[in-house]
Each structure stands twice: as C-alpha cells, then as structure tokens.
Image 1 (cartoon, rainbow, N blue to C red):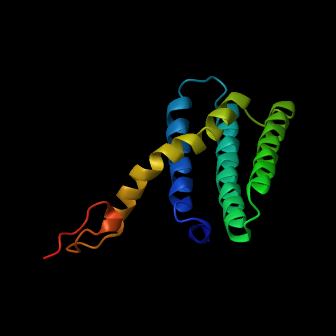
Image 2: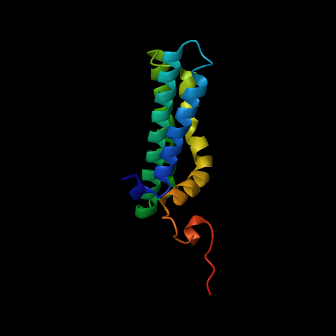
Length: 144
C-alpha cells in the first residue's frame, strides 16, 4: 500500500522506525522516568509516520489532480496544527514526555536524510546473487 503512494515511502517509514529503536535504546539510559520517555518517544514516532504518509497522499493528490500550490499549503498547515494539538494533548494529559515526543517527530527529518542510504542497502538485499548491477542500484552496467 505504501509503495503505491510513493516509491520512497516504505523506506522512509522504515527509517523512522529504525531511528525510534535507536533513540529508545540510547535514551532509556539517560532518563529517570523511563515509561514517560518511552511513551512520549513512540507517540512522536507514530506522529512522524503519520506525517510521512499524509505528505505522500497530499503530494500524490496535488500532482494527479493538479490542484496546485494552494492545497499543498493548506494541507501542510493542517498537518502542523495537528502535530501541535497532539503535543498539547500529550502534555496536558501526561501521556508521555513531550520532549521525547519531539525527539520522535524529528525521526521524520532523520529518516529523510537516511533514505538514500537505506535505499542502497535495500537494493543490495533485494538483488539476487549473480545478477548484474543496474542503473537503479547506482551503477550503470557497461555495454559491449
């Protein structure tokens, strides 16, 4: 389903989750309120995944319907307001550490930078042994 929206989206979501695992394994040792940290972090990771999927849907709609710039701006503002509301809910109801939630949301940015590297790794694992490298894997096969 994710690949139908955007070819890079599954790798982006995987990068967000890998970032979440790394932030969990490092951050859990640095805090005294481990449950609040974990809850906040994973709520932030869920927000980041939701934002990534929402961005892919909005971009796909804008490109296919050619609704243009106005829809992109409106939807990005809606996304930011939703994240701000989620932070308020997390803080008000003490569902998790809001700083850890922010760290989780930043997983979207980190995953965006990690995506090209993750793509190369995924291509190497998907390519069968003995199969020549193609343009898609980053190297052009020499023609005779």
